[in-house]
Length: 240
Ligand code: SF4
Ligand code: SF4
Image 1 (cartoon, helix red, strand yellow):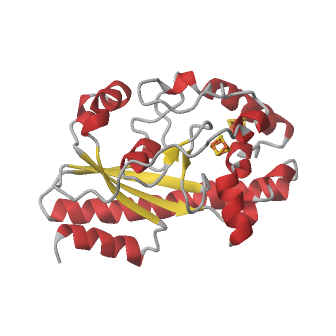
Image 2 (image 1 turned 90 degrees about the vertical axis):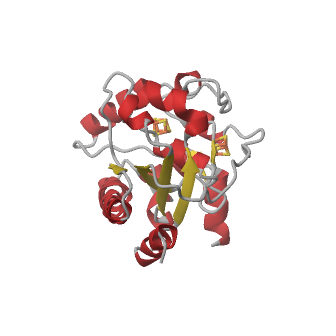
């Protein structure tokens, strides 16, 4: 089995919902700016994602109820992040055994407290792997589950074949995520490759809203309404 087949086999074994390989070179400048030269030295990324449970996401409008909040935080963050980190650990080990560099980026990572972001954007890797488009919510929107997906990435120098083509933005005239956001964190601007995240999204507003929610809901505050409302996720729910 060659290394590419090995990675697909790991993804299948672990029940991954989304798997792709991205060429990172077109986004090198942005990656360098966000994560520095070590991160930007990797030419490829393996992107993996798990779909969130619809049964839990669909309850987010009732998130003032602690049962809903606890359920969302546990299964849509803690458990899925662990599943993602386990699979990226396996993928990295396989790449390393085959003689390649491989860096598993944690599923949940905020290292830049000023910009409230990690050293690398999982959504960027998934987008470049052709798994979805970046919506007005700045979330990666997939045709299969909308934005109801969590992602992780392995950076590597392995010459893996790319798995998909860039997907066009399919938001159209929709502004549901912009209108529903209780923090008014989105500007409503569509994703444009040349513009920074700040042109579309104020992460500080979202963070401040979540802090207020935690204060009023015994520290378990969550939101996720931008993720809940997207018709590309709700439509699949209705069909599913
Ligand atoms: S999680 Fe809530 S507050 Fe944050 S951006 Fe989404 S809708 Fe707005
Ligand atoms: S809710 Fe509408 S505008 Fe927002 S990401 Fe989804 S399709 Fe795009």
